[in-house]
Image (cartoon, rainbow, N blue to C red; front, top):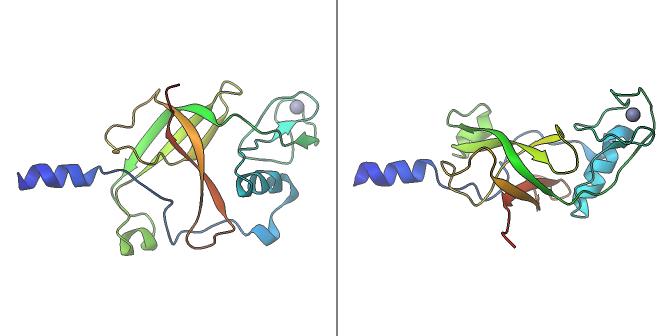
Length: 162
Ligand SMILES: [Zn+2]
């Protein structure tokens, strides 16, 4: 019984962003990243899109890898996607993760609906971590970090089936 309880605790759901790890410096963002973080602060998942060939790209970058245009825009997305790949991390890779006993945690690569191959790294919350699976439909939610409430992270939860 003790062993069973331990196994369950090992994979309990993440419920919030990791604490104590490096965050973006919102005062000194390059212009090509600003739209993303302004979006999350207003609880919108805005993904950089080339103004010329209209292909999305993430993470943000100054130049379109498809047509080499330097022009971009920040349309909102519907926040829907699916788990493309995932890992559950048991070994703390940063001191704060060990000190604050934040293992295990998951890192998920989420493929967004807007474009094939458009993927964002995030965490899946509120799902026992051994139940997160490739192909699982998810949707975005937004949470401020504890360390800097101005930094709002896009996180993902199981998609509501409606
Ligand atoms: Zn382009």
